[in-house]
Image 1 (cartoon, rainbow, N blue to C red):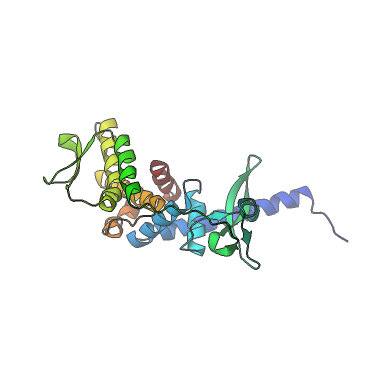
Image 2 (cartoon, helix red, strand yellow; image 1 turned 30 degrees about the vertical axis):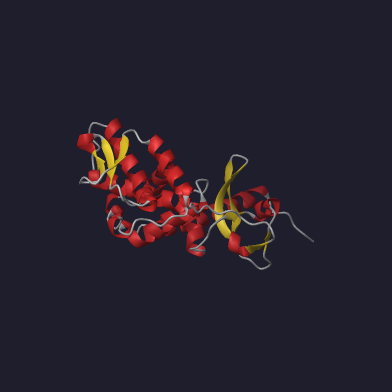
Length: 248
């Protein structure tokens, strides 16, 4: 005969489940920040997954499925119009339910089937120019194209400058970072640790590239190698959440 678990045992089990997922998230986030290559792959992946997924949950998804493109719960995929494949293993996540955090499972699109296609973002053609126009409108300083040197955010000139022959892809890989730098310069008389700011700005650009279906700049992984040194132990989640919020 089925015996119902008493409420205290049920609460203890739920807490243990949450603690286990939190521990897994912490480990996964530390692995993300071990070097620029892992961090770049993570930021591009989190960009693909969209702004609604937290840093810790994204780390667990991408650790289990590095090429993940869209994740939902079992019921979420049913409502969307696709079905989770038999035998598919869900990825644990911390989800808010009724004002509390609990453990849920999500499945990547690759673990589903059905006739309804799951849309992915991949900008092409005129869409690239439109994306640049949208980002330019967000910039607190003018964005210009000229063959003068240097390029990027020029604090002394209060200007973002790119070569006139730069491709749309090249501009989109750099523009979010330069907007972050320009915004910081506008808001603060002194920005403090400039190396950290530049690396965080680049991280934002990489995540935006993921959201737009674009590649990161070729030197992104090398330039992000030093970000770990600026983040105190235990602050990995906070730092990566800051990147997510700026990218959003």
